[in-house]
Length: 608
Image (cartoon, rainbow, N blue to C red; front, side, top):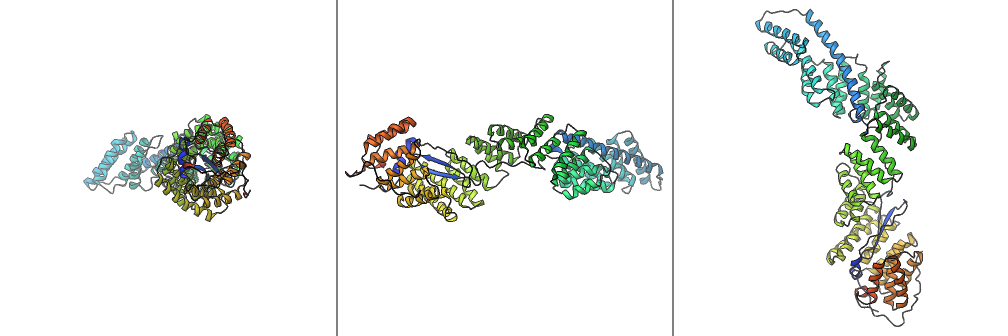
């Protein structure tokens, strides 16, 4: 019998029928997806944890108690602005009293002129003519830089203009005005407070905290601002400071203070107390979506997903565009297997918050579960702008393979391996190289295929060295040996794979290819027959068995097998029939069949 030296011939024969068939399995310690094809044979991709591992809730910090809270943020700004306006009124009254007590000394003409301009500016301030007042105060300081009344008056005027410019949205354009006001009068509590609010809205929490602290230090009567300061501490993760701020609020009872109290309890993992506090907050402010959001967070932590979902939906009733609630609903939907619904929820998040990289990642995973691989790849790319983890690159590499972009798949899986050089990650790189080699074999790029198989062999040997019990790695290594024409090595390794995972059709089909490559038709027939006996619907096993029977000279059994295959896949049956008729050469070369080949080969002893 003539022995075939390379499986590449078989791959070329089957190039007309390149079909990858994923077969999902339940999540397990070695959770992987199998791939089988006539062109490439069998291989397996291993998920680093579980291909359906639960997604995590965002937790506190995503739903900002400030700007990120949508309508809640506007309400909070209004409360802060009211406090600042009251402080400004008191400050102006004090300045008026100081003016009355001031003694105008005009020994020098410049001082006299400075005082005159100051008085004029003060009248303009009293008439709410802020720009005119600023002009006159500046002119007064030109005449007398030591004119304290003018510098303090200019500080107040700049603060007034800054407050007007910042508006209800706390525009960042007002920052230079407040900074100049503070430089002129370091005791300007109003400027510090409003500057803190502007930084708070801009998400610059460190600067917000610093300015709130200075405002309160200057004016302890700003007790209600402690609630706002405490919320900024919470968002910075400084729970102890938030607790201290809460303690300083005294008997004050505002929405911000109630929110702070609830969030402190939440951070202390006092679930029931936090839930009661959030319920109490609703009594004061029912139009705050963040309150319902955090109620949902508490219920999530208490493993009550139905009540959590209800709370998140109530948040959306208040604000339909509230991204944090959409995110958490997406997590619940994903974890319950409602992937289409999860896609819609995460799309709402990314539309409102394009820089939410975790939402892009979760969206990509949802697409992956739906086998919408092009969409998944696009979302993984967006997620990778902010997330650099082995899990992301591993899943992305898998999805790239599913659209036959093997070069990029190899690159992404290499990145995952660099981040996490485990047996699984090495095995997955080998999986991509093997399938890339199979694709190049189909394209008749023999040298390119050989290079891919050789590169895959290196990482797969490393994978089995790191974890000899990783069945997928043993399978992929055996498949790669077949691709390189190293059939005896393939048989040896595939027997190990079957020892780890008995009756594994994917490995048995590859084992049969190894026997077929060695010219051992007896064991090839027996192995393929075992595949078919275990699973009569395994069309790859039927195809291989029919081809092996035909090569052994058992035309009758080959015909029976092809009749069975025709019911499952007429196209594959037609190709097998072409092999029977000699239109496609068996294994790529003529095979001399000895007369004494038994029609029913003896079943080899396999380790399962």
